[in-house]
Length: 140
Image (tube, rainbow, N blue to C red; front, top):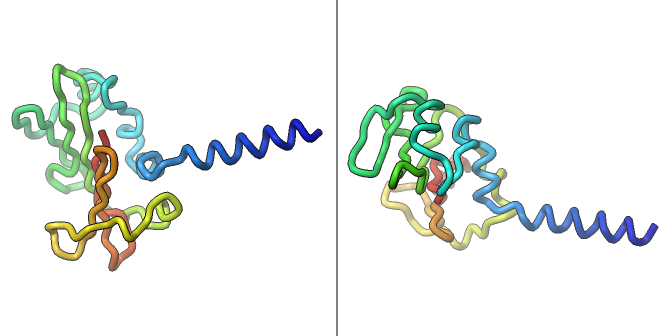
């Protein structure tokens, strides 16, 4: 019985610790975007899911989402996804989604006035501290 308890405790702690803010925010993305994996997802797969980009500038591909022009920016190199930047549209995810896995003291002012930015291992999280919501995310 002790072995089972120890295993369950280890499994629960390991699962909780493995949940990064990046994984938590990714779960709030539209379902089609949750499937994309940097370094693996191809441009063909992306276009099959989202259609052709509304704008292409070099390695940057832009899509409109819910009326917001270029809410989705994908960086594609050699026809493979390198990174994704998504600006949440409509109802934005609450900051509570990631509060347990971030330290608010690590945020810095963002160039867009009232927003705050966290940079972490190639990722970027931009929050609105007034409405306590997530504004956008960049994931490698």
